[in-house]
Image (cartoon, rainbow over all chains, first blue to last red; front, side, top):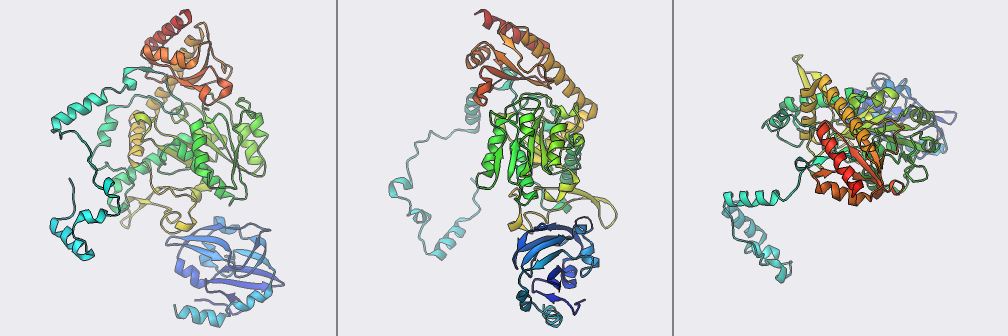
Length: 128
Length: 451
């Protein structure tokens, strides 16, 4: 299971990477592996929407389940990865790169402190 | 009487909960209401009961006793005897979709065939395995469109020429949603076939524009300009279609409709005083993930053999219940089977023949009625399928009563739903109406004028 060191994580299996106040958000390798083959991504937001941490980002459907993705941070939506609408399998093959879900202009960077680092997330997953 | 518990079971249960006898369970009901004397007649034998029920039933008049020109959403067509015969086979005789697909391959295949036939007829990519009737299917189209834009577009435009009952059901479905605005079917927007007033109301707030094809008055209108105008504003278009008409007309899918719904009753289902009927629902591929209800897919099993499965069910009831956009988790299984058998028996040519007969008979009747003094066709400049509006000099309810006395159900009084069409009658003519029937109708109508 891949848990890149430079990312932050939350318990519901989203990762976030912040550069210059812009957060890129996706689901973790653990999450994609548990879901198995993803067949559909339905976004709950559009660019320019204001969102809060905990709001719904998308619903991901796999052959086994449907899972909710929630925002780890608050802010304004800059971009949504529409490529996933046609190629949802990117979430399985490239969860940390091509399978990103949304980019958000972060309104409160202190929210990041509540998230786990890679070691903590790794330990959290080992216990599940 | 069917009772699943033995006397000993009942005793044991009473003992467990500390109650002496079953009657004690009803102590909360006031004593005078508890075990009222029902004053029922003496029990009857099976033969006596059958005789009595027959005599009650014979007091009903059915369309068999009349020459019927009633349509307005439900149509009398000939149903081949094989439809009922196959329908009543024990293997098929359930109203519900089976939940164990692996042991229900025959039923699933029949549903798959139904979906394929509906897709073909409507010119759409995907069809679900039905709703309760045309009106509820139309309401589901509104739900789909509203959710497609996640509530960001809250305006729904309904043409006034959609069946008034459908519009009422749509409003009923939406009554708990304060955000949604259902407009466009007011008298000011009107029922002009050029649709200009309706098209003018399409804007960026609009999630759905809905029209009927042929419309409630039987008219065939070219919806292409409306569909283009809707798409230019990013709105979806739903078409309520008559399946028999689709055998002759350009399918809505070919002119750009996003959703096609309709009443499946004309497809081998008897009028039956309003039900059970069948709602069909088809969409373009882009909306595949948004549709509610049952969907059967064709696949191969582990041995590579053809197999049928319930598919895309992760979406609604089973896994994401709280996120479901519709509460539909059932369908009209037996009615979809009837429609499938009907369409298959008739085949493409036979079905087209039925539609053509409807068209020809309706045009013969319209012409004949128009030639009777005192009767006009107010919409005669617009093409129509098997239904048309007649404007009478006579008072419509009195005219209908007179016709009924002569064994004719004359049609639907439009003044009830459309004040602007006071004095107008909606008449439907199917393959069941012969030339003799029409000639008899015009004879009776002529007498009315002379009376």
